Amino acid sequence: MEKAFVAQRVANKLFATEEAVDAAMVEATELMTEMLKARKDVGVSTVFGDEAAAKLVEAIKALGEARTAMVGVHGELNEAKLRLGIRTKLTGPDKPHQPQDAIVMSNKAARAS
Image (cartoon, rainbow, N blue to C red; front, side):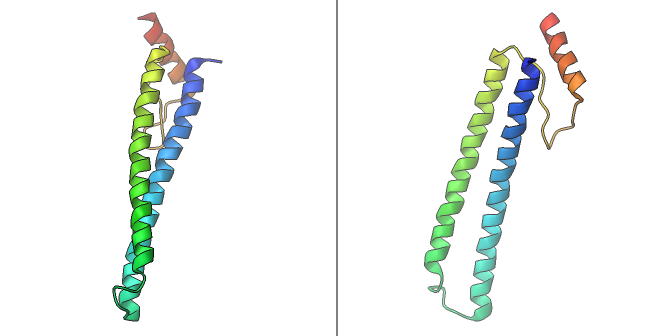
């Protein structure tokens, strides 16, 4: 199988994982917002729900660490791609999509030069 196709398959999973971590961070921070609003709306003390809020802060911190780790994974996979001789820029959800033929042609052109 063409290396560029295999690399694109891995890149697709990488991009999806990065998106999932970002989406989880958004959901968790929105949950915190709702929890704080709910406490105020029902008129209870800041002590009420404090343990839950503290645990959510821990979860958000862990998601931030996961995001940082995924940035590291992205860099490492980019280096691996270059070591394999793949010079093609791989596409993802936030990048304009190249047809697969263009990826292969770009890869072959890079090897020829």
